[in-house]
Length: 427
Image (tube, rainbow, N blue to C red; front, side, top):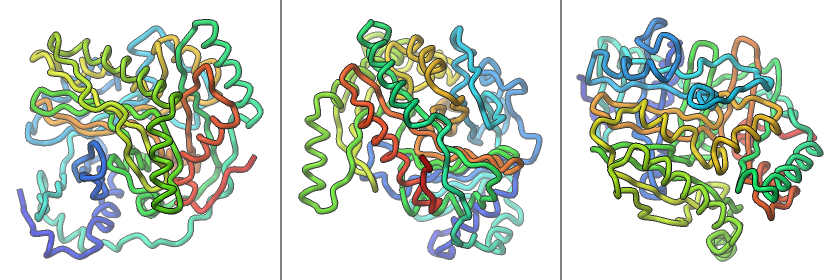
């Protein structure tokens, strides 16, 4: 390990490091944006890269994950992602809608080199010879305006509004209590500089679970505020987000918006239903009687929105590993609805696109069992080989949902990404 004082590094070192790392076909960067004190949880700041043939589950199935976690070197993190389509391995489900991507169902790699930021120092691990010099010799990406055309809706607005009404009928008929209905906005033949776009997204919409991922020609640019699962010293934590309100333009109006969100009965009911779902999920891997809710209806402010976030914790049974946790909890209930399986069946029926990595998770796991994974939302997926660019957003539909308001919530959640791209949605 090589340790360098942060004070000795240039101010743009992280930008240079990610630009250097993006040259590897396996690259994962996790960024907290210095929001540890303002958010209920956050990533560690970590950058990992690997050569074209890293150690990884050969078939991309959840059943292969334990073998990956046991492979040396035992001090290194396992960095990777789980797409929404892993639901098909967990339940009798399928995904047949259009997809502009070809992600493997899941993928984890053991890095050849990884950088970990501490309070005052930078640690370089693995193959470190020449790495610091290579990063310092790399130019930070320029901040030129991207040439991204207006994004088109895969599901026309009228179809989305009609789908909301149909979901409300399903709820009234007892099919589900709540369903997270998502839609895709996309562009084709886009020439995007992924690293520069990621830093613009971080500047416009800083988030505690932000991240950059390269998997061959596929990229994820993520500004997620939501923790899926974290495990530390035998304690598992999940923090579902349900409830969104626009930030106010003045301190007084901002506080009024926060209070309005906190006391909105619809938003509280949505949040509580998902908290109950997550409690049941965690109970499948927890010691009996240890599931608890230390915070219900917490209000947290981000650049564009207030969010209603609750925290669910439990003590893990000693024999449980990451694959067991994912089998019990994936996908995050805030992205499906309740009950989960029926909600996912209806999602496939109403949505026009496969979610791919959206609604999945991205993070890292340590060989001692500790891990941290976000929920992939507020994100761009991009294919450099085809130029396909995708932004997906959604909202929770309940019996008293108003279709036009749900559509407006989708646009609010897309705001940060659209600002970063300097583009808009074309009706």
